[in-house]
Length: 248
Image 1 (cartoon, rainbow, N blue to C red):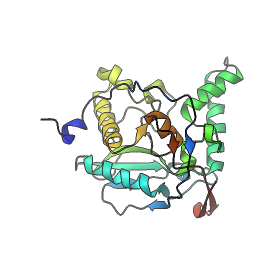
Image 2: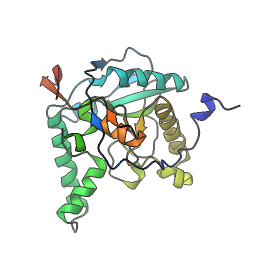
Image 3: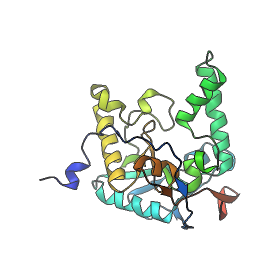
Image 4: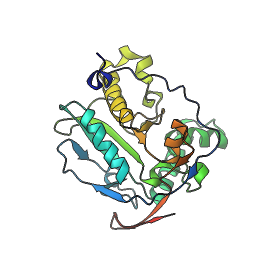
């Protein structure tokens, strides 16, 4: 008999759905933000950009209420000896700008023979262009994107094959499906994370095993929805904390 418990360990199948060419409409629903705390024994918080001392980064993780509810549903699917470790949720525009510039510099150093257009294209594989325009809306600006990994019961990160934000072909979610002998443990961990999150309603960005979306434009494109209900949000940041949000 097919069960959810069995499903979460299944291989990650190729997503053959074609991304919609048209841009989904954004109908902001004004859904509030939740500051995620470590109240749950199997959710751990590691605000990675704050720890890297990136200017205007947040010392807490914020998600839209609906995205947080879906995260808790995914946690119910996760076997009891595993946990979720959250690295990033809502991301201020200034941090998005910093990351895009930082990754672009890395690309120039790594591929010195690339043209500016090639550098830009390669950079966008690993970090969204800082834009609030609906057609190119950066997912983390909405509060509907999560960067995360799998941990043990004590919140220690497990092996998923690469580091977070690693610029590598191995960061692609299905890499170990195609090269299983290279790291079977990482392959199994990616399957577990992916299946729990997608069964709960998130979609995954195929180039990054750690990135999941819900109700934003990226999510809408992947599921073929005509509209997204999470638009861009401006946060007023002081002392690395969000003092207030404004829907754009």
